[in-house]
Length: 329
Image (cartoon, rainbow, N blue to C red; front, side):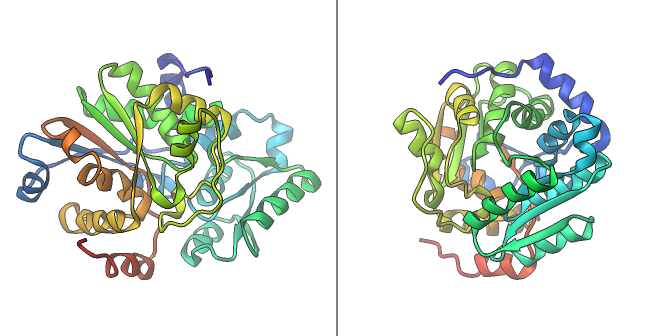
């Protein structure tokens, strides 16, 4: 499925447009005897710390570009979104930065920490029974209140925003051999893949998604956007139940492959991130490290590897529940 890939000039212009409304998050080098024991002393690992971004994840980059595209009348009517967490927080942040209001719909099962994070920045939160009802409610809000729906991962502007993560990473850690990116709906991986493949044409870009939310793996196997019957993973930020045409097309064109990891592998990587890197990350942000330690270990040995730590909106109780239940199996 061929779609238009954002050019490097467009990506650079987008980063300029975003300005100081987003941080240029750091890329850090992991150097320790533990890293050497796990991956070999010839393997270099660089982590793009997008978890330090405003609103706690990469999500504001795309949301801001989408809102920037609205005319004054549309912007004044406000925006809406559906999300269990990071996207809702980011849409609220972006709405405030753009001088408008946000009304987000979240399932009652959403982490209370994330719900409160939305409300703290002035976002109106509507809680519904489940995800299906959330989409019905956000459609009602869009139709009756005229608010613009900001999609969590689909669309050229969203990918253009996430491509700025790849732009920064390639500038901060040049000559990478492999870049490993978490995949939910594919918006992050699609954008980063677009930037990396133009800046580092010889680098591999590999996506990683949870076994219990493998909609992109299934879609790539089938050759088109597919849905899965259910999402079953601790990495709720990567829990997209389906792929959509634009982000799927970009992933298909710019990623070399997609691998999956288990919840236990992500929980182990969360523990390692805390112990080694002093980062308390959510499961999604540990997915790239989990893939490097697991299914990509041999392929990446002796390479310069970039990992994207995509976000970390997680409370202490939830973090402990995942990390204390992990096993070494």
